[in-house]
Image 1: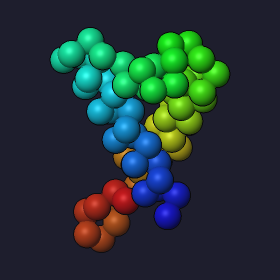
Image 2 (image 1 turned 90 degrees about the vertical axis):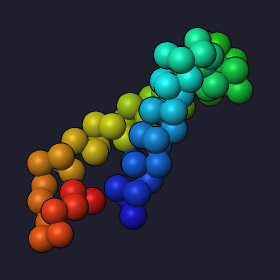
Image 3 (image 1 turned 30 degrees about the horizontal axis):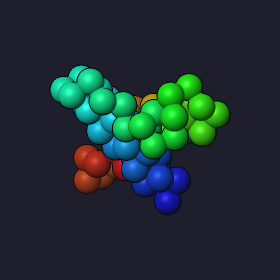
Length: 67
C-alpha cells in the first residue's frame, strides 16, 4: 500500500517536471504559489517518496515486478 502511494507521488512529480521541461510551467507553483509553504511541502513529500522507493529498485519478486 505504501509503495503505491510512493509511486503515485512520483508520477505527480514526474508529470510536473515534464510540464516544466516542455512548457516551462510549474503546476505545483501555479496551484500553491511559487515558494509558498504548501508548494515546498509538496516538493518535500515527493522527494521523500522518491527516497523511500529506492529499495524497490533492488528488490526482486518471482514475477520480476519490483512493486
